Image 1 (cartoon, rainbow, N blue to C red):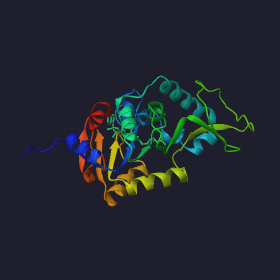
Image 2 (image 1 turned 120 degrees about the vertical axis):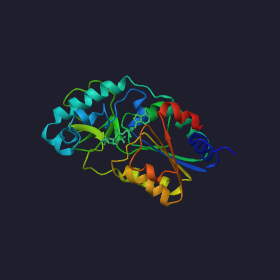
Image 3 (image 1 turned 180 degrees about the horizontal axis):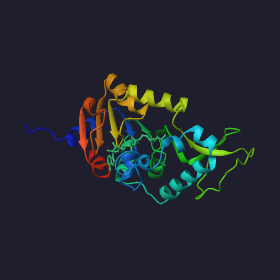
Image 4 (image 1 turned 60 degrees about the vertical axis):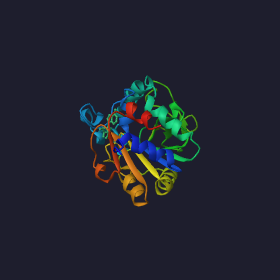
Length: 241
Ligand code: OAD
């Protein structure tokens, strides 16, 4: 019998699986036109993370940080989910245990219709008060700088997990529960260098899952994959349905 292609192998595993967990990164939104962080045109080529995406940077110069987020909000506001985002909504609707963990803050999974998900790095369309902690949705583009809380007038910040900050406890609990119980884990478009997400594949593998990745390039986790699919997310993920 001829050997199955990587896509056919993952598709067959997904069809049989009673529980599926998906981890996504910037690569899934690249096909919608959202810049990734690393690589040739990556955001971190042109900007220093520590100048913009840390609590220290915000304390030092909240105006600069908000200007950067306003620029990104402007870019992301025009982007739409692509066939890979839509395919994951279909996967979720198949009536088995499903959980989507995304590192993306662009909100494109929600825009596509995903509901069972943890946005572990936050969401660029949410703001949080630095004084009272209230979290609210805010889609103003541009947001007036400096924005203040409607409840207590405190300074608002993006509801995003910055370098040096911890993930929300609830997101961690939901993610680990999904990783430890899934039969198949699918990892799409992440370089696998930012923790804790970089350790999620080994956690699922250790718990006995079949682990597959979709990426244009090899990643530090490629060696532990059962199958690696090399290609664009928007072209390959729909083929897994
Ligand atoms: P990266 O920019 O580090 O990695 C993007 C990955 O997507 C790379 O491995 C690319 O090879 C792959 N890729 C690019 N285009 C693709 C395509 N069309 N189809 C499939 N794969 C593609 O982004 P992340 O791994 O998501 O944190 O980065 C992790 C975190 O680092 C981000 O969430 C962000 C950043 O600092 C925060 O914002 C807190």
